Image (cartoon, rainbow, N blue to C red; front, side, top):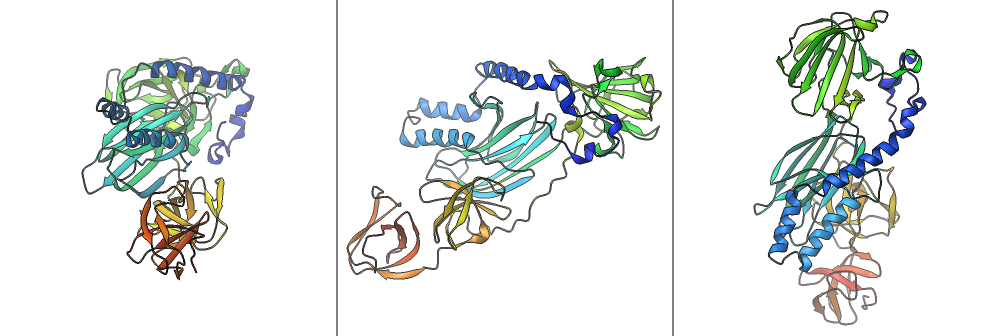
Length: 464
């Protein structure tokens, strides 16, 4: 359950013992489930999100019960349950169709203390509200996702600091009958400034939960090693609540975070340069690294702890660890967004997420038409003619503007809007008419008629 990051654990093993050896970890799943139950109860009494309030407004005028309103709600729910897993950072550019309810979603994993940044832009022919919602997925899959952040605007930036290790879903959905070109940028970063100048998480050599005093207690923070006198910086904006000297912590400073309900503890300082009551900003000097208190026999280091309201001490590692992820090269052409492409050969894999390691949900036939919903890196997010969504490598698709062949139909046939005998008729085509074949799917041919309509004809329509 705990991610073993190599640069965190690769040195000075004498300072650590395996996390799996800590008995309190065995209770962690039960604790997480209990927290989820409390969150569910609190969720029943919260205010409506902008997305929920909008649907309530549809109900008030009788639109929620219409086919369009029902589909909008269904699409929103499906986006939460079927969100593809994406790595961070992540950027996607795509198209939301105004004529049908649309939503895009992304499942991301966060650690406690990581800051998720969401930047969204939507460009359409008309002004539109776009709802951006972040839901936390409970550890118990039988429980409902919990909204933790919501907004509505045409564009903007949102930030959320994760309160626990969990998976989250980011959902993007415009109001009814609105759409356009969008771009979403998801990033993850440390929520706090690294508290020792010119150091990074590589300097953390003793971690949260390590045994102390022969196992009689656990380490309630992390130790950041640096030469004596190295500046110790405020990790957050806040107010200095205590400046003291204690037998255990030596010279210590406490800062109340002004952004989050938590207190930051700095210990073993060689000296302090602030006073109680001082207002500090991120990066302000608090003191100098030392080894005062019960650290007299160890090399100079800063003991750094985060104490959250109602939770007590929590692992501060991911509060200050800066991920080194980079975006993949954006090689998928953007000129196909919102249009139809087709597979260039058979056996092309439709995947559940934009990664070669993701689940294969289907193997496609040659010349399968795909509507391009979005592009990320070298991948297209696509929709099959039967409505199934997934991801394919963009290089394995081609535009449908050039016909595969031209054929003449032997029998009068209907051109329909989808590969189904019950799909609405777009045009009746007389026998002897020539059509351009653009693709095929599930026994139907995707064609263009002489009048310029594109649609579907059953494979037994007498195409010669």
